[in-house]
Amino acid sequence: MCVLALVAAACSQGTTPSAPTTTAAGKPVKGGTLNMLGSGDVDYMDPNVSYYSIGYLGLRMWSRQLFTYPAENGKVTTSVPDLAEEIPTADNKGISADGKTYTISIRQGAQWNSSPARQVTAADMVRGVKRTCNPVQPFGGIPNFADLIVGYQKFCDGFAKVGQKPADMAKYINDTPLPGVVAKDERTVVFKLNHPATYFVDMLTLPAFSPAPKEFLKYAPASLDLAKNTLSNGPYAIKTYSPTKQIVFERNPAWKASSDPVRKAYVDKIVVNQTVSQESTQQQLQTGSPSADMEWDNFPPPSQLPQLIAKKDPNLNLGETGSSNPYIVFNTVSPSNNGALKKPEVRQALAYAINRANIIQALGGPKVNPPLTHVLPSSIVGSKDFDPYPHNVAKAKQLLAKAGYKNGLTLKFVYRNASEGSRKTFATVQQDLKAIGVNVKGVAVPNADFYTKYMQAPSVTKRGVWDVSLAGWGSDWYGNAALSFFAPLFSGKPSFPPVGSNFGFYENPAVNKLITQASTAKEESTAGSLWAQADQQVMKDAPFFPITNPVQANYHASQTKNTVYLPSLQNFDPTNIWLEQGKQGG
Image (cartoon, rainbow, N blue to C red; front, side, top):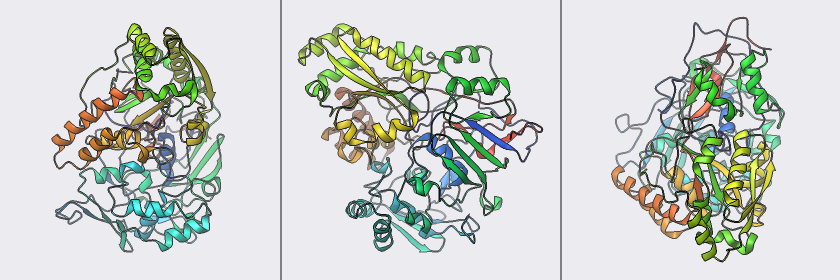
């Protein structure tokens, strides 16, 4: 997910919570307005493009996928049918004998709020998958499936040549077949794969695999025009959207509860205020303000977590993530300092110089930030614990001198200034690197600009606008999910932004070979061994510095009930929350 969502960034998911997930209390109450507070925006109001946990949180209200994760304690990482009628298996003939063809039926009664309302179709699913590699703003997780879906890469290569006019893109989508995604009939979609992938159903939980109505083709993907003219197939629809200021969701009259086994939609309206600071959000939630029910993209300030945990505040939830969030990424193509960060020795020196324990303390301590010293969190198949860069200032100085920088260098560090954790991490790294003669200058940016104007903008990266940054990552699905770390982050050119999330433009053919071998391995044990080798090689090259596989802290107001935490959203599920009678906002 992409990307993100804790103190620094993107879409994150999966391990074991350090405290019980908050559960339902009393009989459900319908009605009222759920008020969510934050200081940042979605990345894109476009289901086939969004790759950010806050984007996913917004999409939960109005966009549905074939499969998703339910707000049911004990099942939050188990995919269930959403638009699909059932999970495909060999027994129900949803999966072919060779494991390379998936046939999926869409629920009757799932509708778009068009005028008049109409059924979500298999053709809509095909259209949605085609939109993921549009030439304006492609989906950031494409490396996960570019070589998996039959004909997808060829389709995308052609798409890249049509230009960015909506009419030209619409013509290409309408006229160009995608052999690996076909509408068999009105409600049956068939996916054809180049090789078996036991994780494919879990992959289809990604919002990128959302259906797209024909009306979407009138607008440029990821554009504000599209955001203000969307169609919904979920329980809510976007009434108004003012970027970085406010989003208002209201009930979708075309939605039928009988067609949606996942979202109960207890509240009538959801209002997202995106102008509230992290500290103010926490204060309002704790003091019972009638216009404050739960967080949007703000979470409890790290400095307040020890006290909240110590007093066992019932409104605090510590949830699973299975992520690397935040981590420090090095810009390997920056021309700054005569291209210093292109040298592995320089990056290794920085890794030895940074004190992980100091950053963890700044983020709220090890209870909520268990250390992570390599690529894969412990919950992911292929994870093997090792620490290649224990804090060692002398070693760092030695490597820096060997690389030709005995007098140090100057680095620009881009970070999100609205986040306490992000600010403190920058300050800690600045202090650590000063000890080896490296001067770190801060580049503070708003939450809404961090990804779209910096991390996902290749020209900005290649100009050396930044040298070091914070980012965050988590698997896009669970268990056998190492591919969703390595393909988007470390697979060389296929993972470079904006298609991927390899923000520092790291590339090593040896790693790419291991990714191919692991992702096509027939046995999970074989794949796990290969992923572990890839982990070792990436860490040897030091394109990034992992910090923690954190526990996600979320807080809600006392009147907010049925607050079930979803790792895929890094938050409670708004579509299943109800508000206490008499305290239903406004």
